[in-house]
Length: 224
Length: 222
Image (tube, chains in turn cyan, green):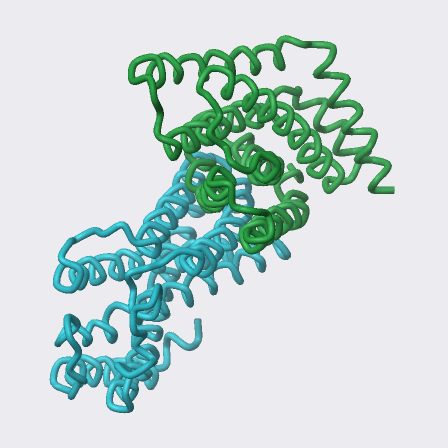
């Protein structure tokens, strides 16, 4: 928790975010048919998935720590990371849906990546159900952390392997030009990489605030 | 040592099933009536059925059978007896034996299912060996995933609801690959051209089995 008391990385995060938003909207982007200006969504949509995977992965790390040491704090941390990860997943879905409306012409299309993420959200909502169905604290922590690890592996298979087996409408899949080919020119990279760092730090920050709240709640519930 | 324990436990599962046959009879009756309901609502009314619908419907029947058959894995025995197992065998042996036994049951169920299903609904499959292979891989995958989920659900208050809520989203990746592979089998595409799907499916099965073996000891320890 020591990192939360220091300020330099929060300032860095804010500066990077301001830069991302300013350069994201004002910066130069290559002109592409159909994509047009929506290519800027790269900074706000793709980065959400990076952050989500970072948060869910960190949560799995803490789940493993819990199973090894049975320290209830690891369970709280893991839970907070999952919750924050879900917020970013929802944001990714919303920004993706907006983008799809202007490029593919529909809010929801039958795309394997979209469907995979929707299933992934269902898997993680079931995680919430597991947590609420167990009355005993240690049992709840043990079972939900086991489920979290299991769910993460299945989710990774779902979003990394399955979309590659079928055609997707996403850039870079199924014969569509990928961003890395020519969209992502050096101008865009200058914004895209800082954007990934900025959003990831923001996710980490939010998660750590959640962890603090959860720890305080845990202390008050023990004192009662 | 582990192999020995697994063998004894699988033998025990088979004997228990054999002594109280009602469970397996109930499962078969459930299978037959579901297929017949599908026949009445699809084939009998419209005379013909779209091959894609045929395939999807069959997998959905197998999925529901699997959830029903495997869901009871951990709830049918009393708590005292589970404590007894806990004291004499390793948790890995418990989960592997249950996965093995459930795979046997599911392979049996899906083979009987495909026989009865083809009888009433017709059989448009072009490459039958490949279709049967996808059934075997599917049965193993379903058993591995659902046995683990059943272990998790058995810990909760309302294990039947928990079982269905947990199992359906988590089984979808497997189901999607299975639908793809069995669709190629229906179109009569040769095995050589489906190595990719089969390899993915087999490795998914292996991943889930290994993961269950690693994680199960933690939920067994109560």
